[in-house]
Length: 115
Length: 115
DNA sequence: GTCACACTTTCCTATATGGGTATATGTTTG
DNA sequence: CAAACATATACCCATATAGGAAAGTGTGAC
Image 1 (cartoon, rainbow over the protein chains, first blue to last red):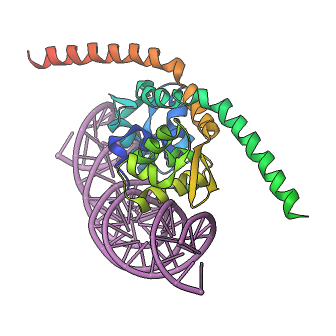
Image 2: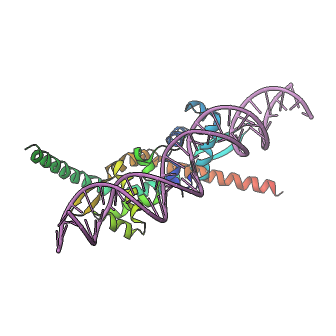
C-alpha cells in the first residue's frame, strides 16, 4: 500500500508545498486558476491539479465567473489540523527542557570520550 | 517527480495517520519501539520505520536503555506547522460567512432551476 | 563465546503521486 | 456556428512510499 490519498485527507493535502502556497495566496482573495498559476510560477495544468485536490478536501471553493473559474479559500478544514497540533502545544516547552537535558548528556559523553 | 521525501519535511511526516498516532502516544511518555508497535497494533518493523521517519525530522528522540531503545516526543518541530496554520485562524470565521453566502447562492440556483 | 531479545535494515511489491505534454470541455463573442 | 479564451483531463513517466517477509545488528545474560 502506498500513502493515503491526498484527496481524502487534509493533512495530506497540505503536505505538498505548492498547495500550501496556493492556500496562502488565496488568503488575499479569490482569483482565477490562471492567475494562481502565474503568481506561483507553476504550469496551468499543475495549478489546476493542485486546486482540484484542495477542492476535494474542501479547503477551497470555486465559482464560475464567465470564462473564468474563481477559487476562494475555505480555511475551516484547517481547523482539524490546528486542533490536532494544539494537543502538543503544552509539550513544546517541556520537550525543550528535555532537549536541554539531552544536550547536557551529550556534553558529558563527549567529555568522557575525549578523556 | 513524486512527492517530497517525508524524511525532510515535518508536514509530510505528519501526513501519515500512524505517525500521528505515534506522536500522540508518546505524549504520555517515552517508551520502547516494541511497546509502540503493540499499543498501536502495527507490525514491529512498521513501527520502527515510522519512528525512523519521525526521528529524521526531529519529532522524536531516542536513547538506548539496555536492550531497548526508548523513544520520546520532541514536539518543537510541530511549531512550524502550528505557525503556518496560525496564519489562517483569522480566516475561519470569515470563510464561514463566505460559505453561508455560498449556500444562499445554491438555494437561489436551486429555486430558479426547479422553476 | 553463545543465546536470546529488541530493534533496524534490506528486498520486493502494489500503488500514489507530481509534472509535463497534448487534448478535451465549457463559456463568451462575433 | 466558428474562433478564442480559460480550465480541466487524459496519458505517460520517474519516483517515493507503506507494508510484509526475511535477514542483519547491537546488547545483556549465562
